[in-house]
Length: 524
Image (cartoon, rainbow, N blue to C red; front, side):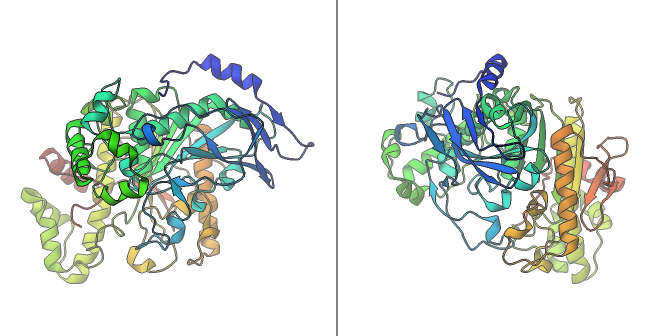
């Protein structure tokens, strides 16, 4: 079972024992010694890559639906030159809606997937560079740390050790079941994917010095489900002392329920019933193909009584840390089938959800014809997300002493149906990682590349210092309740108010009255 404590003295002792094979002066290291053995990486220019590095034992057979176990040791030198299989999931290699192929997983998938990939510019173990640990998105059912979209080379060239991790997904990562709860020493089940993330962070604490990284300067970062994961790690007592900063892209104030263990166990029983009423032992003997046939329900993080001890923990600042967070202007465009098709009649139905405040919202978002209704619908969708992010920040600042830097991404990525999907959910990713060239169906301009330079630099500054600002960049103010400033990132890069006061007050009244807010629309 995963050990849940790790003394820093052990980290320092091990760092002293780390082995590098360093080539002459200007050349790049290609060999590193970690706790499990010696790794052989490859070099691309000034950056060394170590791929498919195991951070936990394969969660197979009797270890399916158990907390991750430590990785096995090996003798000799282990080649780390090929990406690992992505975690078990349904593939859509041609993409879907706005998400063209570079946004989705292709290639092999497997339950044997608990590996991470490392990019480092360090030439010795003594450099103590800042570290980014990237947690991919995908609704907790898809995604991979090996996707070319998330290549860490550009950030590594800015002096950062980049670590991209895999974690179990869907039914493999988040099944709760009474039998699983009963066999657990902590009387908990579900959240195996989050436990994988914690295991990866513990591996980083123990080993990242071998790649020139500083375990005291780890930033956790994720988008969508990865951003939700970041917030769960901030909340979890099991993640204490594993990171110093956080980035949550499209994930602060999402408004998505985190069910309790009882509700999640009921979902798990429904899955077992769909599989023929099998016992836990029998389910563990099924192949992944057989599991996938029956896993039609959605599995995601829960309040398990251990990693997330209770409902109050979900929004807690258990691990108080600086946070950079934000959203795209059109988060809902790829997920809401009605997005872009709103008529005046449909708009009146949409406004009706605000019940007793319907008149207020009709005044704030007026429309008298179909064209105005469509524009009002787009603006309301954006503003719901901004209001949700504001309410999250307001709650957090009641207990946190750490800064928040917030943004709104407004740039429309060129490509298929860009006029329909606009600044869609996750469209900032190729700019953050500066991986525009992996897209085959998009033609980028010099303006896109300059914007990627800017965004990549903001993120690099944050990872290094906890402040995105730096020479040559428009100043990004921290978010404070007295002025409520965020940064608009896109065709214009400038500070702006998160929302106008009348809108903020209307959303707060709606929220206080029991209304649900979130980054995404309630209508699909």
